[in-house]
Length: 244
Image (cartoon, rainbow, N blue to C red):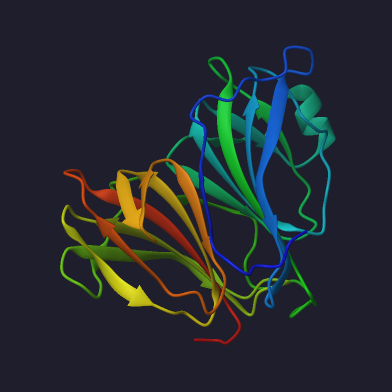
C-alpha cells in the first residue's frame, strides 16, 4: 500500500458489470496510507438484483456506502437477511456510515444491477473505544439545505461530525458550487476526501466529471472551480486530528 505522497483523482465508472456467476463485482479505485490513517480504500462495485456479496459480517475498518444507481437493502442480522425483514433501504441521494465492527450485509434490490461506491479507513491507532458516531443514514441529495460559506456562490451544510474509533473528529459536509465559482488554493492540516456527485469540477489542472473521488492528504495544497453551466454537488469528508 503506497504512502500518500500525492493526491488521487479517480472517475467512478457509471456502468460496472456484475460478475454473471457471482451476481456482483467490486473494483478498488485506490488504496493509500497517510500519517493520519493506516489505510484509506476507495471501492466501486455492481450488485445484481437479489445478489448478496457477503452474509452479515464485521470488519475493523469504518465505512461509508454511497448508492449511485439502483437500490440496495442493508441488513444487520443473518436471520433478518434470510427472511428479508427489517432492512434499511439505500437509494441514490443517501449514504450510510458504518462504525468499526458494525454488523452488516447488502442485497441488491434493483431493478437490475445497482452501482455503489464505498470508502473504508482504518487508523494507525484507536483514538476512542467506540466513538460518538453510530450506524446512520444521511441525505446527500442535491436539494439538501445549504448556506453561504466562504467564497461567493459556494454553499455548504454539515451532515455530521464527531469522534469515531479512528478519527478524533470526522466531519462530513454537502456543498454546492454555482457556475463560475470556487475556492482558491488551500492547504488543510487534515486528510480530505471528496465525492463529486454532480457537475464538472476543475482542480489541480484537471477537468473532472462526476461521479468521481478526490483525495488530498494533509498538507496538500489544492483548489477547485466550477467552470460549467450547472451547479457542482460535493460530499466532503474531513479526517481531523483535533477537535475543531
